[in-house]
Image (cartoon, rainbow, N blue to C red; front, top):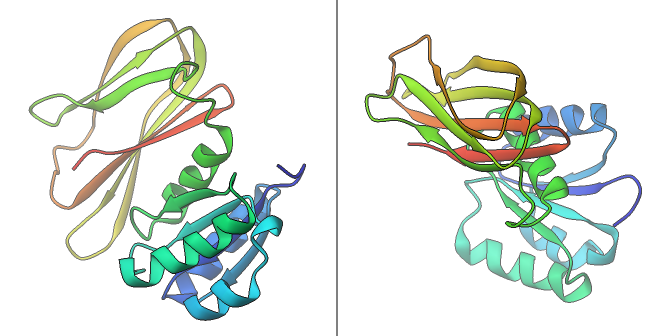
Length: 187
């Protein structure tokens, strides 16, 4: 992988891609974006891309030929399927693709909500500096963010209360432990 991560963003909504591209550039990444799937498939050299991030509105019929063409040129290409049009969540997904050490070395081994939806639970493989953020996309497509925890955690299982009981919409956990990022869709 290149010293500066190289990311290709492909999606339908230019506004979402523009916000994401700017946020990724602020994280020190080289970013290209395209709203034309066929153009991306035929004009982008897969060997010049480390991660392709696809908007969730990219249909399977369009996704597969694009991913296949780029992976043929770069078998190590990481593919990110965007979970929701929430910029910090999408940034975390790209970071997760870039920092994933594999299942046997992940610091966060489990993350989710307990029944009742008022407590976040995570399980740590070993001690680490951890931040936990709960993102929610409500039924009107408004993004909400709640910081759950910031600080050191020991090995084992940890439970944290949420400040909101609102469960309507889609929810996602972003857990950063040392230099690893984990993203979980939680319903």
